[in-house]
Amino acid sequence: MKITNIKTYRMQVPLVRPFRIALGLITHAVSCLVEVETDAGITGYGEGSPGPLITGENLDGTIATVERLKEKLIGMDPRDMEAIYTVMNRTVAYAGTAKAAIDLACHDIIGKSTNLPLYKVLGGLSGEIETDMTVGIDDPAVMAEHAKAHVQAGFNVIKTKVGVDFASDLARVRAIREAVGDQVKIRLDANQAGKPRRLLNSSTA
Image (cartoon, rainbow, N blue to C red; front, side, top):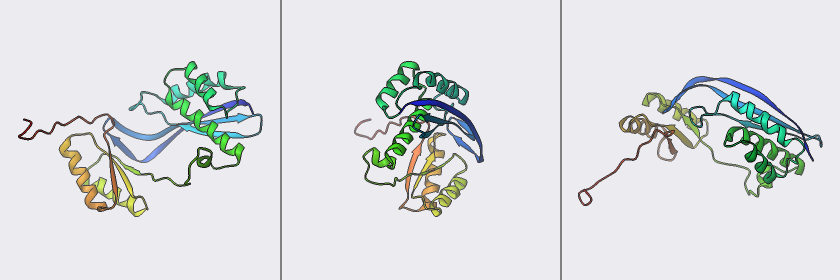
């Protein structure tokens, strides 16, 4: 099996509500959809979502990188993942979003070519994973309301954005805990804005 073509599609979907993290405001879900075609008639799909605030990547750069990688990957077997990684890493440094999209598309092809769900191809035992829903930075009461709605929809893990200042973050987490109860897991994500806090007691001061 050989890769015959790689296509990219630009996707920008406006969010229902703006999403704030410690590094800035996000208004759209932005991603590059990658379609990897093969001579076996099997097509794989992958997606990479560049995060300018996190990694410095943007959509234009991601698409341009996929096009550059395409030149090197056509003619390769998409199931030879180690070879795919080697070629991608030698062609461009970093560029994790573009490489991830191609990686996912190749794994999609592997699953389709073996007629197995991908978790079994990778040696997994369960077809389910536990995931979370994320609550953006806002007024504590608003965040608590959003978290409660996610739990009512069936999610048992809430990831809340923090990183403004310790007192505000504490108020946000406390409000969410009070809204969702003690059985729901809460994860914190400061998006590089967290600072270490040294706790001293009388014996170490």
